[in-house]
Amino acid sequence: MSLIKITIDNQTIEVEPGTTILQAARMIGPGVTPPAMCYYSTLETSGGYCRTCLVKVSKGSEKDPRPMPKLVASCRTPVMDGMEVQNYTSEEVKDVRKAVTEFLLINHPIDCPICDQAGECHLQDLSYDRGKSQSRYDYEKRTFDEIDIGPTIKLNMNRCILCYRCVKVADQLTPQRVHGVMNRGWDSEISTYIEGAVNNNFSGNMIDVCPVGALTDRTFRFKSRVWFLKPYDAHRDCPDCAGKAVIWKFGNDIYRVTGRKDQWGEVAEWICNTCRFEKKDLSDWIEEGPRKIDRHSVISQNHYLKGTQFVASPEALPAKELK
Image (tube, rainbow, N blue to C red; front, side):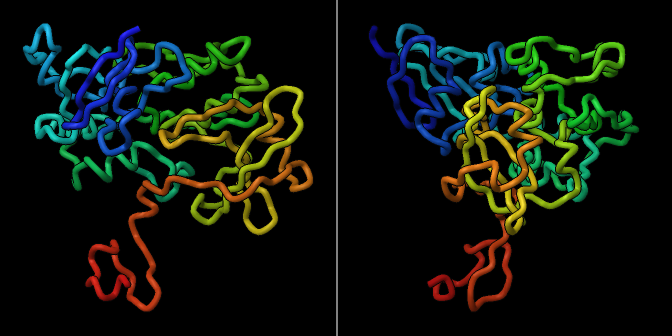
């Protein structure tokens, strides 16, 4: 099978036919990869909802070099041989991404100080990178009451961006889905059918895939900020899953357990609810070592440097103080 050549932000790579632009960009590296709020590589039919990964195709292919007339969703657009794509090198893409970010924040409560997702929120990262300092939205935001959709999961629809990830996890990972998107348009919301409860042994993975703070762990809520915890790779002998997870410790206490995520924020191996919610003693786990976390989020934008004052970023300091 012959490979296809594609150029993204002036970087060229050869990929297999059927590869999407977003997948090709991830193969090159984070420097050219568009953000993605709804796409999840291990969830079938994911992507195409949030529009944050829009890119400009300046050259369709070698056979037809005409540019595509509109920006396209990179997570759903397959590559063509000779295709040239602009992401961060296009001012049009940057402007549209700002507009999409503003749209996603229209109904968002922006309650980061009290949200358990703060520091791990993809929308928080996106708004920090592409958002506006003030909102132009003058109308009343839609609001919902918080509900428990299961014994261990809290749903705050005010924060939801309708990415459908949790629905697809329930469809493809659990034996019976009891929640989904209710109503249409302005009234669309994630909820359970006839006030049912999400209660199966893999439902906790919905928390891991949620890009915002709409689905949170009831056993961890308001206990600590993630940047105060120390993540460790650990495993245990589990009959229901691979038993490979990340334990988040404060001292010698395990505050929460999550799946192991890659640099794109995607879980590599799903874990069961037993490992996630019930195994909170150190004796339950075999530690492998400290977890390497990609600290790209807003919680890492400030730095303490020895012998200097607190500053917004290392670049703000004179070069001699950075030695």
